[in-house]
Length: 350
Image (cartoon, rainbow, N blue to C red; front, side):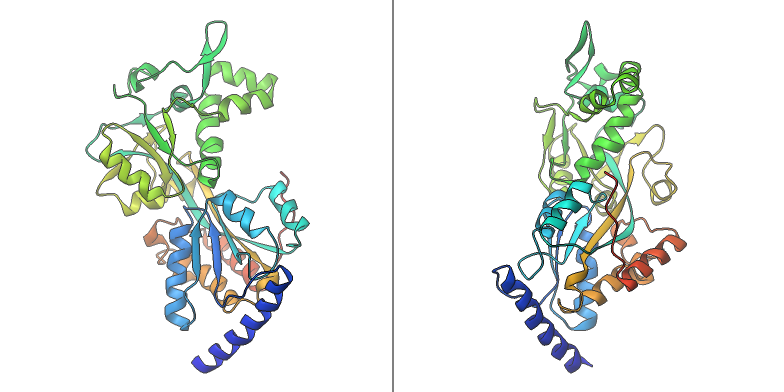
């Protein structure tokens, strides 16, 4: 069986080389996945298991952020582009169109599970319990003030609300290229803004203006873009007393001895609260696969089958150990069928 796998791999590498020559690039003989830093540890774990069980080349996995990974994925077909884009949000219509313009016309969308965005501090630091419009009033660039909107004047958490710690507001979070940033704005900032009466009224009268106000973060070094490495944010929290970080639940799981999560509207992030939707800042995780590369990139079909297997993504699977919150059984079965049948996605609505 090993000899047969290597022979198929050699043939596939030649086929991918032909694909790559069309795009003016050299060949490769292994799987390439790029994108979300939150999905990175899950894809890396599947890659390790895949390489060990098949004897094939170790897949290349890069953390470029969701936007960066999809950008690379959509550049075309062939060895010079990734086979898989890892994403911590759904692909946007504009990204789908970019893919199509570059000849990437059949894309398989596979939901792999759920993740929650945590707001965390060093385990030795103060406890935070966020509620209502706290996050908006702390982190939005402009907030309601006398005569309209004013530059955010809040410098400490207790200025936002008296029940919060007196520490200065300093939040390390994902940059604009990250799907985690997109999810933070949509699931963290926008609901907090809606809890503010002035912003709720603005949402009723001018939805675009509301989104701009809710989604624009401070630029005065209170919110600090910290790159695509969520582990770096975790390390920063332990070195910077009183600071707060925003990152995926999996990193909380892996670093629970050094950091702790805040509650949001009375709910702490756990496997149960994220999968049930009780924790407010939760989201779905995806991988996107080029159908044109299946049967060409060695082992790609086996790799995506492994990703949605019970052993990996099911309850108690090895990805749960990394912090992935599993899909319900029926939904996982449906995603497994999408992977098996190579069913292309339709264009997203927006």
